Image (cartoon, rainbow, N blue to C red):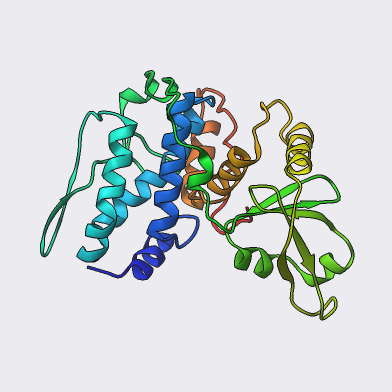
Length: 280
């Protein structure tokens, strides 16, 4: 059995987008279950991609140390029960005992698990009592808007300050930063263009402006898609950027099949399927 960090790195090497932690994937699974209960609005392809967070947990459970499994299993089983009965389950056995970890019902990205049940109504049933999505977002989630009204969402302040460049902050490239509840955040580069980025809470709130900026983001950068509120937008962008990437071999195979004599024209790949190692 391996530690959480070791398992995250191992699955990352196997093709997952990043070296995830159990908490990150459980939060993503909780968010998806909440959306499903409210009535899932996207198509089956987005659904299978969104479900990859549960597939990651399924793979990790076969590798993790027993104490981590025992710690997280009640939370995952509770979410699985809300998700609904599944056609099959898999038992992950460990050196000190056994813990049931129900298998996912369909694959997402490169994880090959599928079920005919995915075309049913499970992901469209209403559930007025679904919990608010804010419970499932990391507490330090950051919304950052730029001059083109584009939006970047980070799961933590550390991710944001490590990603953003001081020169862009100094040049005014980023026009606003918010927490999910509309709290106004200040982006500064006190050491100048070559220094580090600092992100701080101002103590002020402007939820109306956050909602307005998110709406403009959907109108300008997600043309043809129904707009979502800030919380659903954050979960959508976080999960999209965390999807496993399609490897070069899969892409080459798909191109060969598409170009072979008598082959049907292939539909374009979803935009989150890029060459492994490509940008988000």
